[in-house]
Amino acid sequence: QVQLVESGGGLVQAGGSLRLSCAASGSIVSLNAMGWYRQAPGKQRELVARISSGGRTNYADSVKGRFTISRDNAKNTVYLQMNSLKPEDTAVYYCNAYLMEATRAGPLGYWGQGTQVTVSS
Image 1 (cartoon, rainbow, N blue to C red):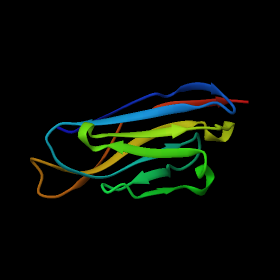
Image 2: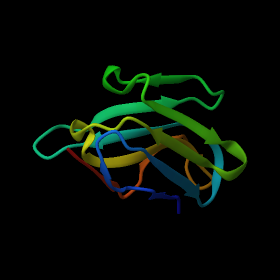
Image 3: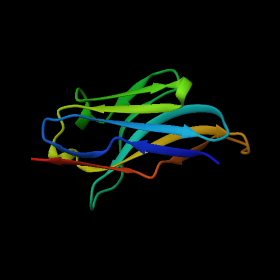
Image 4: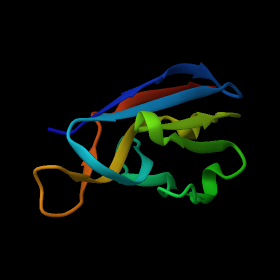
């Protein structure tokens, strides 16, 4: 069974930084794209950043220049470095991975449990 375990959320003042981590474990045959999404209260879940297996990245316009996504393929881990945080970045951040599990016929998307990021003004 595949698990995505996130860490690194918390409370920070505006202008501060946080680094989120998400480690995938289980019977993983191949790990394709990984990404971070967020959901603020009363809003839909939105893409924050995404990184392909080859390292190509894309970002939401609202975080470009402030957030950096990276991955360590040897550790099946994706990171999100968040700098210059703003109160509007407050949300639950979810890790997502598109991967092939050993017991499945094709790749599927998996979600982490979410980690709260709160930015105070």
